[in-house]
Image (tube, rainbow, N blue to C red):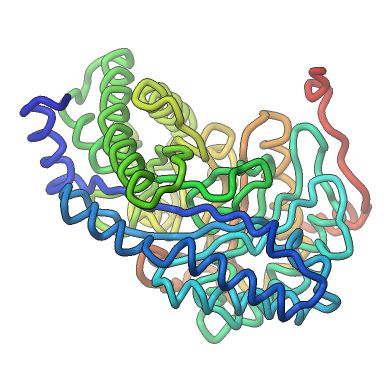
Length: 454
C-alpha cells in the first residue's frame, strides 16, 4: 500500500522533476506470419500487429489520465524481420516493402515508433540477413516510424567483422538517402553487441525469439528526479550520495511497475520487464550530464566523469532490482549527445570528445548514442568506431551500441536539428587517421577467453 507521503512525493516528481514513463512497448511475435508469398506475408504482418495493438495508444492514454502519470510514447517491437521475410524476400526492395507495411500499420494504430527491422548476425549472415541489411537505406528513407537494429557481436560468439564493414557502408548510404532531412535516417538505426531481447527503447527494440507471442515492456526515466535528490546531499560522502541515488531509483521503478502491471491487465497481455534507464530529453532539467555535474564535475567529460557515471549506473540498477522482480532491457544511464542539453553544452565547451564518450560507454548502459559527425567521414572510419564500441561490450559482457549520424554536407562547428525527443547536436570531430586496412581484413574477431563457461 502507498501511504500519503509516497503519493505526495510521486506527484512532486511528476510535476516538478520531469518524472515520466518514457514508453509502453508492446512486443509482438511475427513467427506465424512467415510465408513464401510476399503479399500474403505482408498481409499477415499487418493484420496481426493491428489486432494486437489497436487499443495500445488508448490504454496508455487512459492509464496516464487516471493515474496522473505522463506516458510519453507508445511503441511496438516485432520479431527481427530478417527471420520473418527470409522465405518471401528475394531482393532488397522486397524487404523494404515489408518496412512500408510496418510503417503503415504503425500509423494506423497511432504508435510513435515500431522497432524490429532487424537482423541478428553476431556470428554470420544468412542471405536474408544480408538482403535486409542492404535494404536499410531504402527502408528508412521511405518510412517515418520504422526503426532498425542489427546485432553484430556478442561475448559468446565474438564480432562479425564482415557485417561491421558492411554496416559502415550502410550508415553512410542511409545518411545519403536522407540528406534532405539532415541524414535523419541514421537516428533510426543502431548496431549492437549483446543486444537484449526485451529492450523497450528505440531504435534498438525488437521482440526476441525467446519471448511469448505478446508482451508488455515499460521503460521509465527520471534524470530530473535523481538530480533533485542529489541537490539535497551536495558535499556529502560517496556513501550518502550512493544511498540517495539508490532510494530514488527504487521510487522511480515502482511507478514503472505500477503502469506496466496496469497496462498488462487492461490489454490481457503478459507483463515482461521494467527498464529503468535514465534516458534524457532536450528539456531543461532532464539531463544525465546535469546529474554528473551535481555529483561534482564542472562539465560532463571532466576528469572523474567515467567514475561518476559508473556510480550512477550501478546505484540505479541496485535501486531498480529492489523495486521490481522483473527489471530488464538496458536499465542504467543513457548518454546520448543530441537528446541531452547538458551533453551538448559539454561538447560546445570542449569538455567532451568522442574518445571520452567511448571511455564512458565502458560503464554506462548503452554506448555511442545520437552523435553527429562530419558527413565526409569515411565508411571505414565508421566501421572502426563500431568495432571499438562492440569490443567494449564483448570483453565486458555488457550491451554496447552505436547510433552515429554522418550529416551529409555539414562539418565540425555546425549543428544539426532533429526536433522532438531527438533534439539537436553539434557536429563532433572524428579521428582523421585511417583504419581501412584493419576493417578490410574480413572474417570474425573470436570470442574472448572468459566466454567459455559451459
